[in-house]
Image (cartoon, rainbow, N blue to C red; front, top):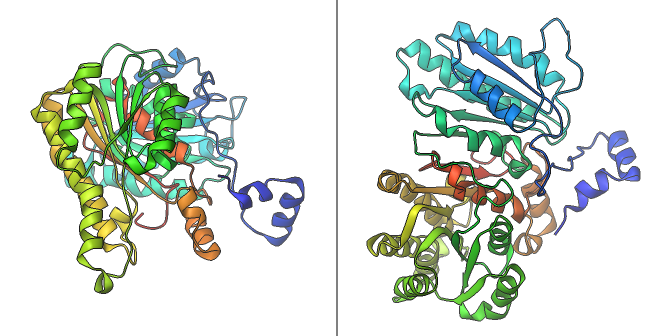
Length: 450
């Protein structure tokens, strides 16, 4: 699937037309390809106050082969090539007055940011502040980064990562993700890391080598993309879907060298059948991606019980039942990862989707509640909330609805299934052990629910 307007606007004739008419021109996003460098150019790192992460960030980027420039001065002095990333260590903020130093660094640096660049801010969480003034300064960054994300053009993104004291060892994986092409459609987001035992760095090209991953709803669309990306990253994928999708499921499994398992996840024996398969074939499981989901849209007043119950059964109850059974059966291997697919509808709501939105909001609550229990096992559970993703399903929407849905975000375009898949694959990497209980939106900073 492709974005016809983005492709037209970036063609020779289309560029002329859009410029003359003053129409938006969505950028071609920088997406990850195996073997590509972390950044296509240098990075500039600055700090606000006496930050504690700047040296570690500099060391991390240099280890990745990135040239780190000196901060650009506010009077316009520059240091050669335009940066591909602007990174602010804001862990030194004490009062709102300190935000002036954030402005002094960001304004000239962001002005020079090249297309498809990255702005990343790392800061302490407001909840850990020593005073109301410090909490205010830290919370101010939330509005700052969300606004920068809306001001950037050319496919660039801006995000904020909260790093509590003691969690410094967990920053490498999120920093790499937000700077890389894997996060092409993740924009204007705020997330937190926590202290965790981070394993020795795996092969960058095959971070999931030796892992066994279950992906539900894998026969098509986003689920198929997840299975393919995880296989690309080295995992053996057990692709799961209902028997009616058996042919498509087999195609996906054969393409990636995985295993097809026909299973109705709402069946009373679904969890037991999955456990038996995993124990007999693989001795357990490292990764579970709960992707399977359905829609049965109607206005609430017109929605019958069958529509309500079927959506809840597939989208939420099956995740609860299967995850609990895997925990009870001790089927998860050490360092296990669970990622659950939520939705922008679960955050913003959507007319005619009270059942779907309720189920997807429930996923967020489930992940948040389970996170401490997973942390005790050195495991993680997170959610990913896609926005408007270009799929066969959205292609069937009325033209006007589809165009509005795909343009009302900071990147002015719909995302691709691979954007969701890359975010999920990142959360399942061993190095992402410090990301737990989070919900990451893959929505291009959609105006809905922002």
